[in-house]
Length: 158
Ligand SMILES: [Ca+2]
Image (tube, rainbow, N blue to C red; front, top):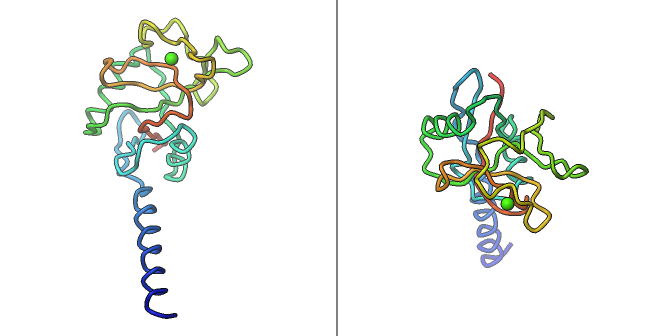
């Protein structure tokens, strides 16, 4: 291997290590009998990539079982100390009955829930199958295209 080949090889190895480093799991924090972690060290990503990140760290995208979703979201993000603003949640549209949403564990998520922003869910433009929460809207939810890119809150059992 000559010097230029070696330098080129070294460059690509360095790049691969840098990309891999971005995917290192953050610190899991114990709250409410679960562990939570935010994708602090990663870029905003599509839903499925974000979900794969959570799963590669031993968890999944966050789900809740609460009558105060917005309150718990704010408390969780404050507790985790994140300054990030837009997060995927573990809620998806039922693609055969598009008027319904479900948590990733199959429980229904009410379309009448006050956690939605007033003009949401609007399924605009007919392919908004994922759900995200937004700091600038006091964490109110919007349905979004799963190919949009946001940060993610991961959760796993203690
Ligand atoms: Ca929408």
